[in-house]
Length: 427
Ligand SMILES: Nc1ncnc2c1ncn2[C@@H]1O[C@H](COP(=O)(O)OP(=O)(O)OP(=O)(O)O)[C@@H](O)[C@H]1O
Ligand SMILES: [Mg+2]
Image (cartoon, rainbow, N blue to C red; front, top):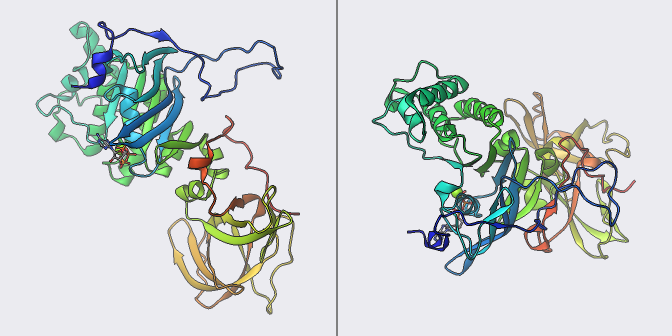
């Protein structure tokens, strides 16, 4: 038995009004700026909220000071590598596990802390896991209607409405073994949504599907969840899935949320090298700070606030390297946008379908860099080419100091199409 349910009020729903979440700052809607002393318009509380939640197993903290809020019609993705604490966080949100620290709130009311714990069935939370199981002895209609209350006519109407939304009308009387994987998944989604849960918690729900089917099911599920206005937490270790589905990504590492924001912002303004590398291959160019500048063969980069002698890493994604032909040993002239070109020798070029990847060994230090272009470009090994860096796409990080998981969390703005961070490259 879950130890935590023992602590719940006898009715399982003893609640306490929570204090505002200091750890989940969101912009209050306001006309113009809000100056000190002026009243702030309070933002509606999240449907489901975690505040400063922690959980340890055998003395090891696997969820560490995690705070976030889920809002109606919004998909929040908890994204991170295997073992970082995603499922544990989701289980705490669902109420099937109990945090050691912090609290869980629904509509601004504390429903779980160190004194009480509302059990899962009282939380109006739908759950969907990778190993979802339809009842094999029930047909589609009865699978979906399983958790529904009301008259037979009401249940039938809700089942029909959902089957229409998942595009499976006419499948009412089929049994699970007569359905494809994608169809089963859509039935599972319809079943989870049937009782109109206010919150949907999904743990890698699409990972059992093959790639093409997955995109289709994912997009359909997303439309449906938005239509129903459900507040969604989607757990995944796949950055592509998070980018495709999320309104907000919570990037998790070793139990902590190290960065949060819209997909565009997280991708274009990573908090550290590891966050950049989680979303794509990266190139790393090393340098050392002198007078707040890092000198590299690609030009100078600003390193404000870093003391002389600090080793820095300039990180750039392969699609942001530019390639130019060699003209009698010369490359293109330096520009403010692309800095100084450096020459490399092609080691290998591969066609990847949507793009070509070209790997170089650089002449100045023998380091390897990879550039990609969205076209067929396959120069033979040994070809000299000039590479330059799109300076507004470079990220400069100090090397070997505390990473984001120790240094704290970065909260990105709400904008979904905001420009990337200002370049930290010297003019
Ligand atoms: N009941 C438990 N007892 C002991 N350790 C546990 C328990 N549940 C989880 N853990 C450990 O906590 C850590 C986080 O586990 P969790 O399942 O939350 O990871 P995850 O991010 O969901 O990983 P994955 O992507 O592989 O599913 C892991 O190291 C796991 O071994
Ligand atoms: Mg997991």
